[in-house]
Length: 462
Image (cartoon, rainbow, N blue to C red; front, side):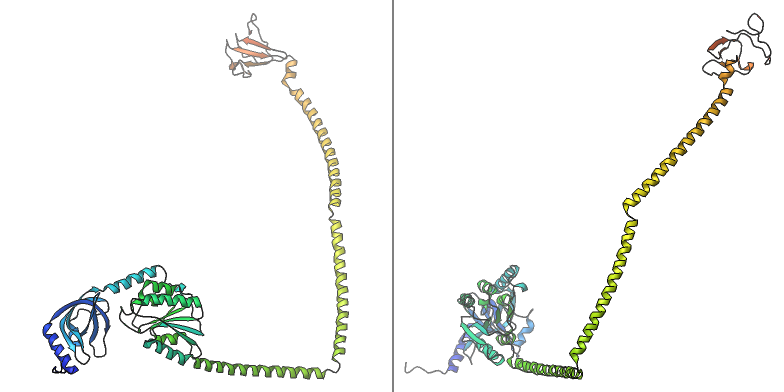
């Protein structure tokens, strides 16, 4: 062993580089892009990983012009290139020449699936968000005490509001146990209820580095917290499902301190300004009241006998009141008397008696008028009856005249011999009774001529 050659670090790294580049001159590696970053140089640095392992990779700016799309975290790709060693750090990596894209990685798919599921259940609704206190007195930061993120948060918080108490609850923020520790921390803090705000704090990282904040149990613990929760996980471009469930999402831990804590110096300046304005307003108001008091004192001193003057005014006012009241009562009494007279004049009993007397008079007049009318009608009827009796055919028949008429159905009165023929049957109406006759012969003799019956040669009837 003592005869073995002693290598420098540079020599051993160079030797390893030569061995690797000879052994793997050109390879194709399938995996998922993670922890992608692109500094000002334009080169893309990322990690190519599968379920069990990972390898660093670099895609230089000149080779990116052959890509069909920009690389992104979570993409499944096949990278073709050569394995080399970066000697200054002693790290081996894949120098990528071409990239074939084959879709989104498994973790990214799980991320999107869980996010959609929890959103459908309403865990991200604005109505569930709890308001943050304007001036929190106690803040609990749930993070790894070894990370730089917590120091950035505390530095900004102390500068803005040094009187706010800040406690750090140590947990793992990366790895398989991180999710359970975060859930336990939220449950413990909620049971104590001695803090105003919970801040989940962590620096940036790849999707798998931040995966603890994408676990369903962590997201549900955040949504169910009674204490407002602020998510300050990763950098501004990093998003976790915890960001959507939290009551406030901050792009960075430093930004979280600025968003939840007021700047004490600015508040103090504002308070001093308001105090000055208040003092000025109070001074002005006191001056106004002082002037008013002085004016009233001057007015009171000019009255030699203020109480006597007020007493006289009161007596005069009382006298005017009594006079006015008497006049008012007299007027109301006069109106009352007039109303009583109108009531008596329009009393229903008096009006009913008057109308009854009118009805008796009208009934008496109606009876007189009816009696006179009946008597007049009786006289007229007697005169008409006498006249009717004088011209009545019955009176004529009683004097020996008769009325001849044709037989039924016509029963026409016969006034001319031409109305009948020999053999016709006629009726002769007498004063008492009726004769049925048959014409045997007719003659056109005028009235006054003698009727000749059968056997006399003139006329014969039955």
